[in-house]
Length: 330
Image (cartoon, rainbow, N blue to C red; front, top):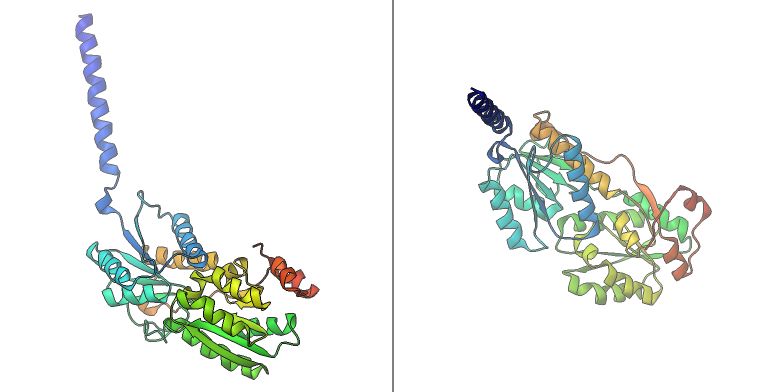
């Protein structure tokens, strides 16, 4: 009889274990049940990397965690157009629930790949000018997102305040990036309105940056650069060329101040990423429709200064700027 009771007890444990194991597997979603988020990044440099970090953090805060409540498919094209195309096709073939493009070329590649899957723009300066949306106020299709439009007027005002005797400002950007061309042309207009002379030069690839940067530095009092992925990828090279001439760089991006720029009124790249991630989560939750959701902007820029670079170049940063600024270390 004791053996019989023992057998029944063991059998009961086995059956209970099997029951609860089955319950666990039925309540745990399989990978096929999870939404797929495809994130395509143009290349690797600090600004874009911070945007991606912000996207992931915002998704996590909204309850979307890779491998648990979503599948995050992150692809980095390393600046190669053929990679952009194949990676965009990959997302479409996976039937992604939403796709995110970090930087204009990545977003354009995703747009070419699908007119149906929702696309969120991560840091595209002017989606309308880049032909990604019908208008920034009413996108009208499957695309919306976040602009990294830089406060150019405030940046040139900062140059005036730090370098009151500066006359000729160099403008340097990539001729192969639509967003850079738009910013460069706008910067030239604003600089002229503010009484500056300008000298504009462009690069076609990172291989041009040292030579053209050096040539431009020999002709101007300071150099301004936009949110430009080509130059961001070769920022250290540019800084070497301009340092040799004793000319400061005023970049549009906070991370480029950290890489050797002097100062900027810039947008926080991580916060741009957070806003992009929040919009992505809202699409997954069914809270927004890209067609009727306007392009979003960060409300204001922050002042970032690099005192170490100022000291190297013999430039005194005004006290009133130092009191407002975020100090960046090289």
